[in-house]
Amino acid sequence: MNNFEIFNETEENIDLDEEKKIIEFALKHENLTNVNFNVIFVGNDKIRELNRDYRGIDRETDVISFALEDGEANINFEFGRLLGDIYICVPKMKAQAEEYGHSITREMGFLTIHGLLHLLGYDHMTKEEEKIMFAKQEEILNAYGLKR
Image 1: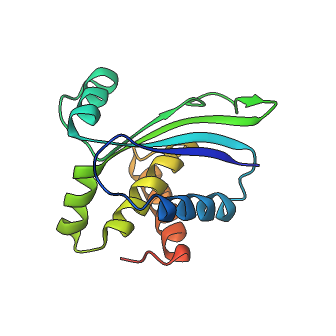
Image 2: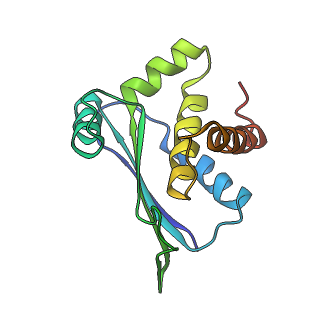
């Protein structure tokens, strides 16, 4: 059984029910079972602090994933794999939805799936990695119905 928690550390209204549906769909789509992780919605100050402290980049970003299996074999416990945490910046999410001309739900789904794929070991440091990861993102989002 998959176990994930969603936290909203902002005063912003976020459709957490839709977020749960997106995550459940993605997990089923990828045939994942017994994975554990968190999704935390934060503001600009918190995401900037995380980006500065853990990546050495002193600015806001849209999503940061802290993958516990990063470069390691799967970390299995009796309750399943422990993947890590996904932090999503709500102000960036809303601004990007407007900038790209799609719904906040579509942007939320994109950032969530992007973060989840990072937890699963996908990356986009090279063109080939980017091609694979971004194709997987679009596949999941399109299957869910969150098309561009």
